[in-house]
Image (cartoon, rainbow, N blue to C red; front, side):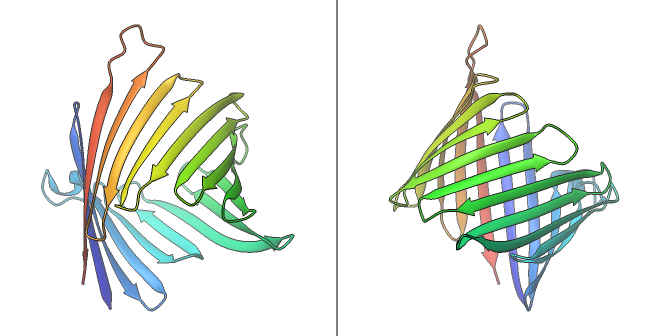
Length: 213
């Protein structure tokens, strides 16, 4: 039985937090336990602990131990006009919230996605264009807010990537740099609200370590 472990730390001006997970592969089924710093800082507790059973590409059942909440996620792929349509159904029992997500891949460069929260007006449509597999442009339309969000990203062969985002509804501008390897990852994010009179940038950093046994 293969085991994978990961540890992620997040640092910003307000607080430092961490999350760790351990996953076991049992055939085509994956068993995963996830803990946050709240699980260990004040002594071993159930706070921040969740348990999950996953079959990649098929389903995920996750149980939040302190909240006694079950989250179901089911995935499937069908073909529409010979194009793959990826469908995802997500339901959280505690807040009775259901989300439907779909993405249609026209070719290796063009993809159309939709995300809808059942029973609300929350629906987003996103188009993604990947240029030569390295640069990606993603406009996103929020039907509930009648606003657009934009994201532009660029990957490099070194494993580095940069991303810029802009949310027109909140006038939030973001920049992100990340570097990932098989054993670790590092990400630095900066954001500033252009609507604020005093435009103070917010900085965060994330570090991830991966271990496979």
